[in-house]
Length: 127
Image (cartoon, rainbow, N blue to C red; front, side, top):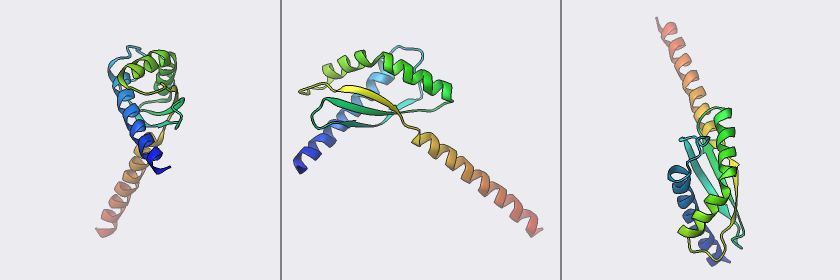
C-alpha cells in the first residue's frame, strides 16, 4: 500500500509539472488567462481519471473564460500529456477551479487594512 502512495505522489507531481507547461506554453486559446496556474493534481491510482485544480488570478469573468478555454482544449491537453509522460493509461482530465490562492490574497489584504487602520488610530491616541 505504501509503495503505491509514493508512486501516486510522484505521478501527481509529474502530471502537475507537464500540465503547467502545456497550459502556459502550448495552448493558444485567448480565453485562457496568462495568470493561470496548476495548484495541484490528483490522479486516481488506476490512472483513469485526473482532477487538476486550477487557480486563475483575476475577476470572475477571467476565471470563467479560462475554465471554458481549458474545457475546450482538454483533448489536446490529454494528447500532449500522453506524449510527455510514459504512463500505462493517460487519465481523463477534469479541471476544477481552485480559489484558495485568491482567498489567501484577499485575506492578506484585509489583514493589512486592519493593521494600517489600527496603526493610524494608535498614532492619534499617542499625540
